[in-house]
Image (tube, rainbow, N blue to C red):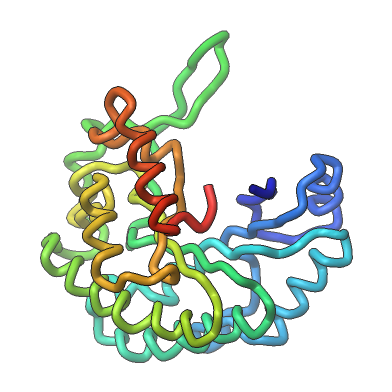
Length: 245
């Protein structure tokens, strides 16, 4: 196991120095601020990003998320789906050829949801999510989508993209839906249970079709009552399907 530092989107000298001070060896960037012309990331920009991390004595081990508009039509079977698939294949090839070995993504067209912060222990303010507060919000994408539609789109992705990752030697992992509820503003949250993940991994049985183990989100799933989460961790590790925690 190696300790990494992540969840920031710019590899600035200040952030990288801060990571060095923590003593980590690996860096993960979340939706890094790179040029997005043509709906894809270019090889030269990715190489430059990797070198900026290496100059501080660490390894750029993963990129988590591209801009949602790189693949929203793939998730929702929109008119630009095939164009976005081609662009994502190019982006993933470029990541691999730039020497970045892991790409994490999600299947949330509306991204992560939160409601206003709440006070917790000692008066500290914490992020929060109140499902009742958002049940009646307007649709985010014009209509209600079904789980069957979303699974069909995901299966196309899984059957198309991980084989490219195998060719290029890069691993892909999908993040659980956050929060792991049934649906949000007309969009089903496909990954809200352990069985959802098992279904995804069984589409293409490959180390390049893996998961980001966001332990906080997994812990919120109904499956995680008691000690169940430990059994699921063991199952996923034994299948070599955890790209990072």
